Image (cartoon, rainbow, N blue to C red; front, side, top):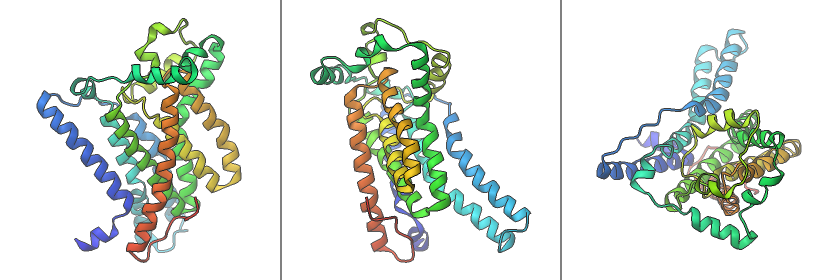
Length: 313
């Protein structure tokens, strides 16, 4: 047992603790309300399963071609290591799945949309989602819809690039994602909100339209949490992607920067978020990145023989 505990990593503890606390909370509320989780749409897991499958396939091909030193034993260990390294990502997605269930709108009917709208109006005179509606056209709407989808694509793509080049940086990226998710889940619990498009449809004079808009947003909305406006994890996680893309190389940063910027803007133009949600997403990203450095530093001081992620921010 001690040997098993020694092999656990800080991201394992964090992912496990977050999941345990969340499902404990849900279980208590469900026991009171006699409600069961009923969502069954898990297609977004494919965005993590795909890079894992590619890594497993690569190891299998190396073995089949006789290029794997150590034979089948080494190949099995490599595949096991891949599954073990990427497993916390799957735990993160599983935890997010819990927020898709309608249980949240039943056991906690509060909504902070009016308060968030009031904050935007105090800062900008009106929430920007309303201000930008007149200059949107179908082509721009499709562009922002595609950019909004990138929050599912960019993290596993960067994670795969980091995993193949720098395992320590991969671990810190993974830990930052999990930390951001944990902080975001706290926000969902304390400040439940659905966003301006859903909460205040009468404020918009024009409907959004485009060839991609209806099919793609319908596809995404089936998998997103219904009360996930504050903070914007779209913004938080894409910010983490941009930060670690810069750590990977200048080229990665230059490619990711415009994509991430479009992703941020899309959360406003598609009426999913208030600007204060974006501010909160940036704060979540900054805290998660800092905490990942602190926690991995702590781990390196409490055990020997494991690589430490880069200490420089």
